[in-house]
Image (cartoon, rainbow, N blue to C red; front, side, top):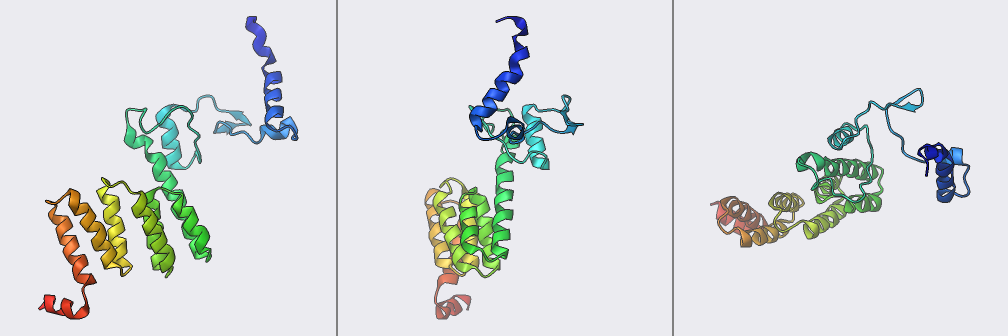
Length: 213
């Protein structure tokens, strides 16, 4: 085609909008599309930075509320994987806020489902909030899901789950999880100390008094 074929771009774009939303007027359909920001008088600011890292900084600052990544994994395809992983942090924050709001409204089942679809760390945080709100069953459900999905090698997450089990008054579950961790790290003194505390809390009261003496 000739170099000036791009003059037909609006026609092709309208055709695309009609294909996507055949029952909607193209002017309205255009409003469905995400826009570059910030805008100046309705026109995208071409000086705005939409490079890889700038996008993730904007997500952290809340200026970009969502990202559809096609054909790449931002957490693995950039030099700074920690920065790209801010996406997960934002997802966790959003899930925690949504689930906490649902809990406050008494929508326990909805809160549980919202947290269940979030990263494991978010489930633990919402389980903590559910425990504080007296929603023990919801907290137990979230902890079980978090424990099932946490990677065996992810010691901090599994320790957080064990801590929540103990806070829920389920020291035997905490001890069970700590024993699983110790199977891979038998020389970890911190794990042994945590396990001793969990076992003591799980022991019958008479036995605990004996241990105390």
